[in-house]
Length: 291
Image (cartoon, rainbow, N blue to C red; front, top):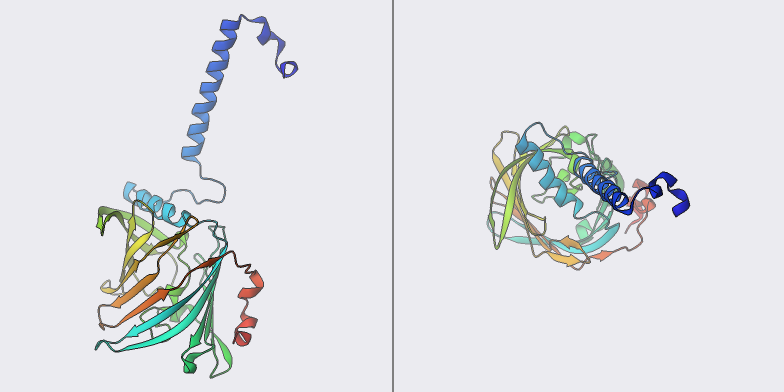
């Protein structure tokens, strides 16, 4: 080591040398701190917004989004419970598989496959989430034996009679929205940051979404959806969170339509992670062969 250091240094007294070393270490520490606070980690989007409230809203959303980074893939079975205004229920069973795309400039890929009841068995929805470009979505209907591409203009339509829209079933990507911090308030036993997000992509059925994100685990607890007339349309609540080796997943998700008094519950079973999913599992050509 000593051979790599300028010999002039070693001609100085030990006290002076120690002072120089301390000064250099302090400068390096200050420089390191400045870089880490001002520069995003590779692959992360810099904080966006022209006001303090917008930047704070973005940071809260980014912290929540990045808490889920690195899950790679997962698979889960669930029940979909559709409830009409009179409280009558119908049930469906389905499987959802998801492949993570770590780049924040790309969206995750997901596949939904219905298993029961018989009249809907084999129906499948494949989604390739995008950021500002229209998401790619394909729906396979066994009764018609054909794959239908979902137009971006139709993504606000109901998904197989539920209170979820097609666009609700693509992954929520950080850069699909602009954000603004509103306030903090209690959410159950936790405290939440409340942030409004505005879709940056075209043809959304929503003008804005108000999102409650808890301050302890950084998970979404509730979302209010506003329609194109800027009226409250639906509320999504997410409960029963469980932690899978660092990744949180809600197990009861309920969408309530305030204008029709209908609701749809998604009741999730146990998640399986790292099940070996590949890009080839999420191609349109597989949809007709899934059943």
